[in-house]
Image (cartoon, rainbow, N blue to C red):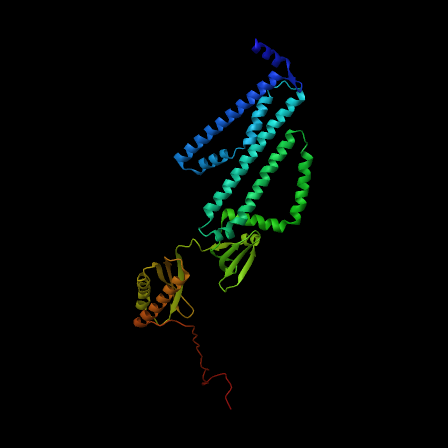
Length: 374
């Protein structure tokens, strides 16, 4: 009897123009929806963790981190919207509910996207940064910050425009005005923007890093700082050279960090008084000198050409150590050995010479047409 009376009271009572039973049904649906969404989220996260443990892949760990970043307040909003869809609302409110659905989902997608960007930038720093934290900051933190800021700005711009378009705002004129304003700003700061994007290109493509020895045009030195606008290089003479990032990437860059071996070509000349037998023995002599050094790999040695004042030889070998000082020490050793061996062979090094042939004046004889000297 009391149950029937309570049921009649529920059916007859209304709140804000809505039947109480309808509100109770919507609340129950919202609570159940929140529980189901939470359960599904935990199941998906658990499966992703299992996948990450089995494969030990970056993609699986990224999925786990993104799912763990799901907003609980937005989950509650979605659950309430599911419950509100069961209410007997006027037509205009149904349209508003669909718009709120889109807003909530767009915001959650934006949060997932932002978390993905943060994870990507963090892993980029971990992957590209050496053990020295100061070097990490000097090398990639500025470019990583610029990359993160640019991607976040693009993401939330797309989310905002999608939300405005869904709620009925005409964004065509808004986008056009942004485009005109963006062009004006870009023209005003095109040099700065060019250097910023060049810095981003250096950070992503990594043609060189802090600590690398590079040669750009007439500049040779060690990279000290890669900034947002300029790169600072310590030259061999000791001074610091500041180069615009844009100008730097417009030129051919020689990076010696990955240099493993050096290919050396050098030549020398011997005097023309050298006999054919001596000239034939010189390549083998050079080969023995080079193969006697453990860090050198012989390639070839040839009697190359007849020079203006010398018999020219060309020698090619490889240094198995990238250090420039090691190469110079070995080349010096080869030069000294070559001097000793050629001296023992009786061969002299050539030096620029010129031979002048002076013709004598013709003598006066009988029948000569030349006038007689008086």
